[in-house]
Amino acid sequence: MLAMNEAAARILATAAPTPPETLPLHDALDRFAATDVHASVAVPPWDNSAMDGYAVRAVDTGPAASLALTGVVGAGSVGGPVGPGEAVAIMTGAPMPPGADAVVIVEDTDGATEGRVTLTTAVSPGENVRREGGDLAHGDRVVAAGQRLTPARLGLLAAVGHADVQVRVRPRVAVLATGDEIVRPGQPLGPGQIHSSNPYALVGLLRTLGAEATDLGDAPDDLDGLVDLLEAALHHDAVVTTGGVSVGRFDLVKEAFARLGVDMAFWKVRMKPGKPLAFGTLRRGGHTTALFGLPGNPVSCMVNTHVFVAPWIRACLGMATPFPARVRARMAGDLHERPGRAKLLRVTLESTPDGLLARSTGPQGSGVLSSMGRAHGLLLRASDEGGVREGDLVDVVLLDPDALLRSDPDWPA
Image (cartoon, rainbow, N blue to C red; front, side):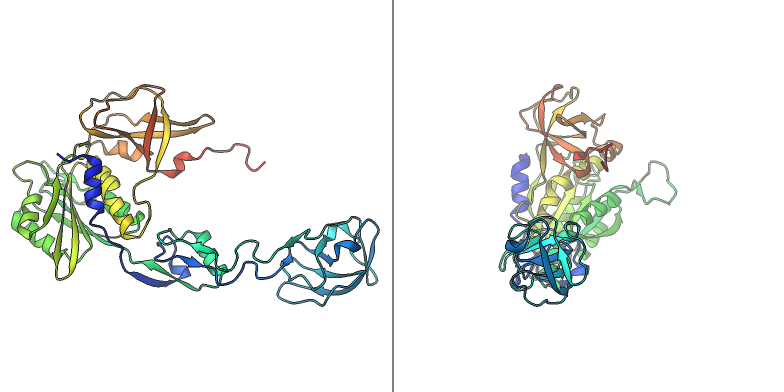
């Protein structure tokens, strides 16, 4: 049986970045940059006023200094030069006029009357001035390849003049649930049947990871039918099946993979939950498809997606760090487990003034989907480690970044 980190490494070795495509900025939110992008202009492109006020020579300023008002410059226009004993009214963002080296804010003047402005204070050179390139210099990297394009990064791209951006094509992932016992929500349940939940959880998770996920429906426990459905899905970059991958009489996924000619990398991982995981690749007509055979138990299915499918997707999107983020937390309460397999235990997280506290979500059975709904993270334990005691420091794979936040009852102050 393969160790969890070795299984992850074998899967990651099969991932290749998807090709780039060019999108307008408005269509690129949450996509992943295909290349580094550098600033073709400085931001700001010239010295400009940080405040509404008067552009002056600092040497001319001081309490009761009276300066001749020679003009007005607004944002989007250019003012005339400022000479000795002169001032130009200037608006926030307007270019600094030649000769001026500081701005006196309106509140530190008499507001200007009869062509003159009287100051109540002195200013230093550079005061209330935004320097050329103070935010970004020409040639600075604005976005790195593999970065998610957040709203702020889209704003940066626009600020340096880009109307569009090259992003990675979303990897196409098909989800196929298996088993005679599953019935879609909204349909009546027959004897021994349950509602099919895995496709809804997986398609949602895969889309949040940046994949183009498609639900192919449910496959009955019939080998020929399963092979046909998988064959029809091979144009996707990956196919994820749920169920039918253990050792039961109707566990047909591995046999279907074999019939298709899948090059199997492994089956079974020394972990809990999620041991019966099958993975391989199939190359047809110059196109390679990754095939993940996930367990049918809903928690195992989701945990394996976080641990194995998610890094594969991130690598396809060009991310430099494809593995999930970990945080350190202190355990609140005991959690009993035996050594022997790597464990990923569902926990809630609480942000406190002393750091993060981790608590078990309750029963850790692989069919307890409600515990996954409550989980903020997965507590990691190596195969030679057992449970944890209250107060132990633990590593947690973060599932919900909002768990790191602590509400501020005094906001706004």
